[in-house]
Image 1 (cartoon, rainbow, N blue to C red):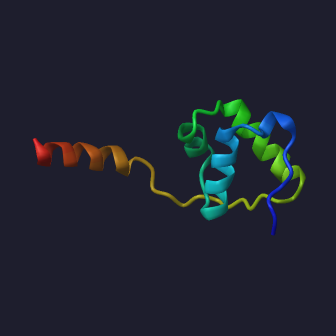
Image 2 (image 1 turned 45 degrees about the horizontal axis):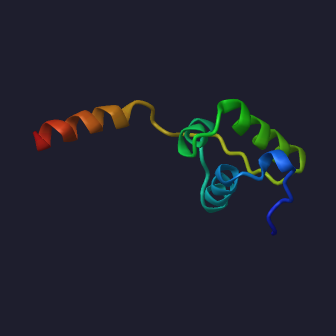
Length: 80
């Protein structure tokens, strides 16, 4: 499978980084927004473009919510 040819509005480095990471693993939309400084609307526009071209693999998440903040706090207390 080859990289999709992107319109000019998606030819910035941040989009290329995001596509590279998306080619390696599944990401949540929220994580995509946090990664490379893209706005939520920009990420959604890219996802809509990829979906319209039928090159997007979408999976439902089964991730447990809320464990990372708890773990991070626990690690801070351990190292204090």
